[in-house]
Image (cartoon, rainbow, N blue to C red; front, side):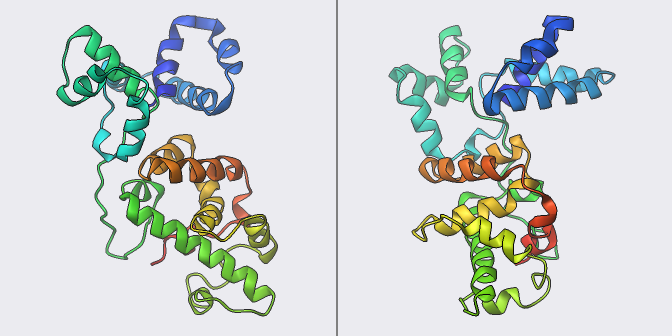
Length: 252
């Protein structure tokens, strides 16, 4: 359960005032809470699901914690006493240890197990398949996506890159978004070691909701994930029809 979803469950206690209160919460957490509250309302007739949410909210650590890149855990542990590290490792039921573990995991959503498995087609057929990949796989995918976008831009100027041949073939040919949109995604990006990652994140952003964005960046080293997360959040509202098709994004 995400922090936003847990807070949405808790907000039920606000009754009729919940909507007004939650509307004043800004940033990504506010967005997650409002999305979670909408989903909670939609499944209000399913007590089993509500019970699962409540149980997850009480658990000190979210499911799939091992799938989070260790650098995020280290950053959360840094301001806390050494006991927090031991509490996280041991899973103690001591109230103080539980509180410390919850503090460390407060911003960590449930993570699907890393499978690195793809369907027989060899493609990432859905966002759910993407966020079940490991960090190295995700970084390679984002960089390839960014390289495809850059190749479209270069081709529009009559130049070639190493990806030129790849984007000329199905399913990428004509499916990577209009040249003007690709140019906009590449604008202002320095082609350093993170440049293609930035462009790739901008290209995929509209397909990922707040939870999936968070799950994706937590697979990556924290310094890289912060950069990718900022790009994902900024481009999340871009029109999907200006982006690569999912078939093109999912291709090997």
